[in-house]
Length: 239
Ligand SMILES: NC(=O)c1ccc[n+]([C@@H]2O[C@H](COP(=O)([O-])OP(=O)(O)OC[C@H]3O[C@@H](n4cnc5c(N)ncnc54)[C@H](OP(=O)(O)O)[C@@H]3O)[C@@H](O)[C@H]2O)c1
Image 1: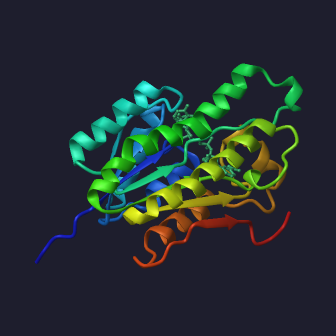
Image 2 (image 1 turned 180 degrees about the vertical axis):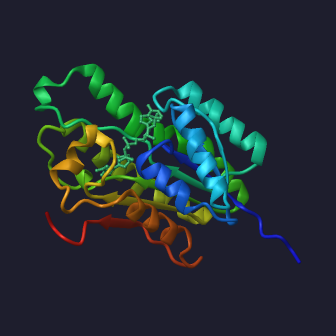
Image 3 (image 1 turned 30 degrees about the vertical axis):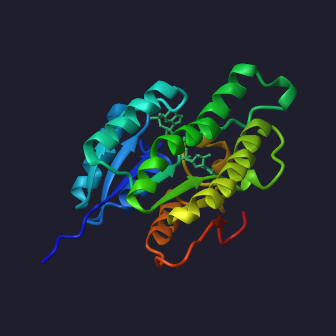
């Protein structure tokens, strides 16, 4: 009997929140997970939980603002596994702390480098390997903030509107290689994101991180011939 090959899945921002929930959801024999974020001890903790649940995972600390670290992390994945079947761009940050004219340029840079430039650099690193392998899947966690005006978080909203444009365009570039590029846009989700503010505001109607992870798993298990390009997720009950 032939043993099915585990898909190599790189998940950024997997040390907590939605990224950690995705890792736990994919803790099955079908996947070999590479978890990336800054906090090594939290990453290690998620690795242990994945292993305990019967999955396979390792962690590679990586600062998404640092192009050299993204290059080193992706090179390590490709050296070890020779491929990357699934890239999940999840790492992100956002602060709901005031109008745009009060935003410090450093914070603008931090937001754009993490939420928009890192996904580009990761695509640059992994898409050639997916093309060579004859297929792959790139999923990016956007936000409903990428479809709406978000007063007091304009830079965050702009980074997610930008991520949408990047991924819609990339999808058209890569589908000829059997690479699917999907966007998942959740509403407020109960994590530490934005100091927990967005979730606290809608505590009665927020999503759980596992709800988003469930959608990721659904997209990864869709039929080969179908391509779910975008999913918007709202809590069923409004706050
Ligand atoms: N929570 C919400 O309400 C909500 C709604 C819609 C969309 N989203 C999106 O969902 C994604 C995950 O958010 P979350 O809610 O899970 O937030 P979270 O709990 O704050 O987790 C963010 C993750 O990103 C990682 N990260 C942040 N900056 C990084 C950097 N410079 N380098 C490497 N890793 C970095 C963090 O790890 P380290 O700190 O260990 O580096 C952490 O694992 C984000 O893209 C966010 O925009 C969230």
